[in-house]
Length: 124
Picture 1 (cartoon, rainbow, N blue to C red):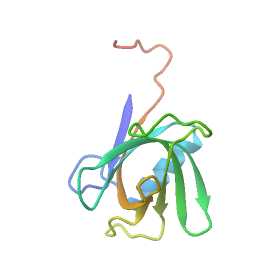
Picture 2: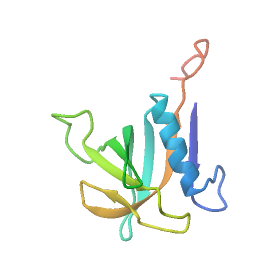
Picture 3: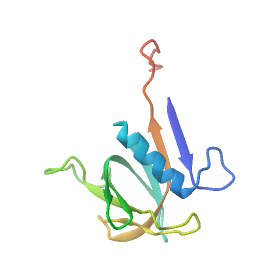
């Protein structure tokens, strides 16, 4: 089973940007990897999997991610970092930072796969 949330208006499971960030943190606290999607000022968006986080003193939530568009991590269990800006309002776009490209992005979606009950059969 999965749960998906977005900051896009007029869609199912719409949440504010601040709630989206808190929910990502909550799932990571429960050791549930979170697939996040972000948009860029120009060009297509991108998706990656957040596996851990650290709260930074300067109002940022640093997400440690596995990014399918980059090589397999060698020294760390992640290969990309996204900083979420806690100071931004729901109307601010492109205040988050993708350190691989050193570009501003806007994290606006996430999906988490939640544990199925033990008695649930796998459909495939």
